[in-house]
Image 1 (tube, each protein chain N blue to C red):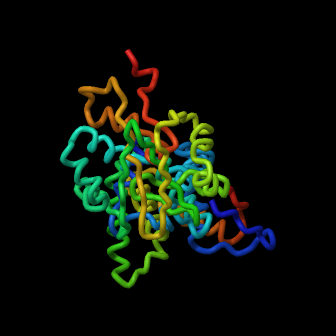
Image 2 (image 1 turned 120 degrees about the vertical axis):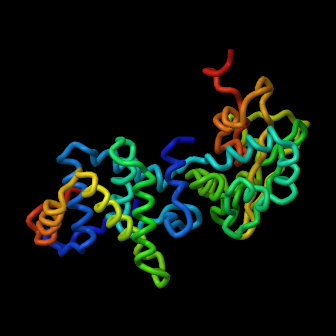
Image 3 (image 1 turned 30 degrees about the horizontal axis):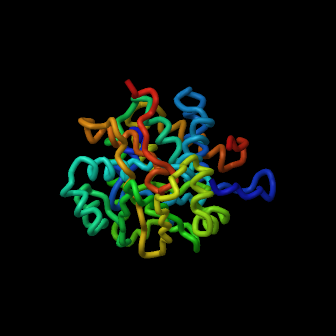
Length: 207
Length: 111
């Protein structure tokens, strides 16, 4: 949240909208309908960490529908439009992981990110160390994320730009045969679609 | 993936929240508060998200095509106030009175 400007003096005039928002919040808190803490948390969450639900839906569809996967890899923007996701005039390229190739996405210049699929970028994605090290030593970065790929697996790093956004299509984990799209979408993490994680079946769901 | 994300994603077209490079933009602290209040109360079951979305779309439509989006949270706040008054959760008079108190400096800020 934008830091509040320090008030010049105790009774600085409030704008009409500020006064109305304050009035509403104070009344809702007094009536026990909301707490200011809950509002703080929501504002924080939406400024910093919106969920990657649309990306997960796209991945689950690609895992269960080979024809869709083909279209997704050929033209990402057009394929996600089929699911009602608007790439906002940005070109989306989806890159597929395989046993021999692991892909990861970075934006070395700033923080270009497929936000129309993944929501807000995580803080580390925007950090200078990730942006430089992902290119120089991707294996070491992956190791820090807990992803250890054998030497024979090639690591490819994709550098995003203002017009071109990448998303990783992770490998579908073994043991998910017969799962519904919704079940699959629930286990696809944001980081797996950036390429800094692999998709695994959560312990709670293993038989 | 949560219901909340789905509801927020449900605000599309003119009703979609302003973003910069994907991140929600609150130009003033009160805008974030207005957003957070509606979203916080939405989980209480006291109103349906569709009811809020329809009011928001209505407010934006009333502003007309000349509206450049800078007043988005003004529409949001108006839609939310109307909804709360209609649902009987807040009384219009107390809302106006309380806002006057803040404007006149008779109350300290709560955030």
